[in-house]
Image 1 (tube, rainbow, N blue to C red):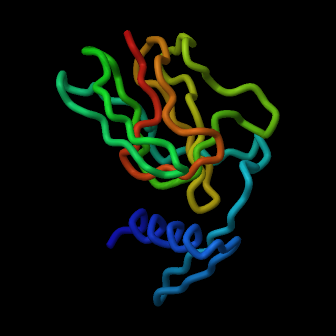
Image 2 (cartoon, rainbow, N blue to C red):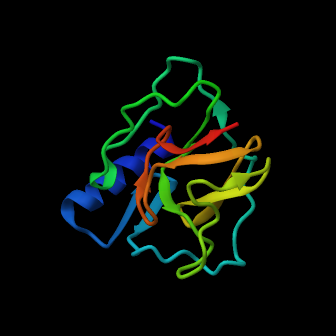
Length: 160
C-alpha cells in the first residue's frame, strides 16, 4: 500500500470517528494528521512542488473520475471534446486561494495560461501548487475550498 492510500484511509477514519487529530506509526514511517477548517499555512510559505503537476487531455468519450467526498456528487457528465481535465495527483485538502479571505486563484469563466496556479493541495503539511498545462477558460471547478480530494478526482475543466 502506498503513502497516498494510507493517508486516504487515515483521513477517512478521522472523518468517520469525528477526530481532530490522529498520529500513527508503522515501523519507521509515521503519520500525523490534523483537521483544520480551511486555514492554509501562511501564503508565502508554500513548498515548491516536487514536479509540476498539470492537466492532461481527456480522450473523447472518456468520463472523468469523480468523488463523493464532502457530500458533493461525482462528476457524471463528459467534458466537451478538447477540454483538458485537471485531476488531483494526490490525496489532500483543496484550497482555492493562497490564504483565508484572499481572492481565489481562478474562478469559473477565467482565462488561464500555462503554468498559472489553479489551486493548492495540502498533503502532510506540504503545499502543492496545481498549475494549468495549457491556455484556456476554466469551465468547471469540482471541489469546494477546504474539501478533501482523492487521487484522480476532477479538480478543473479547462476549455481551449
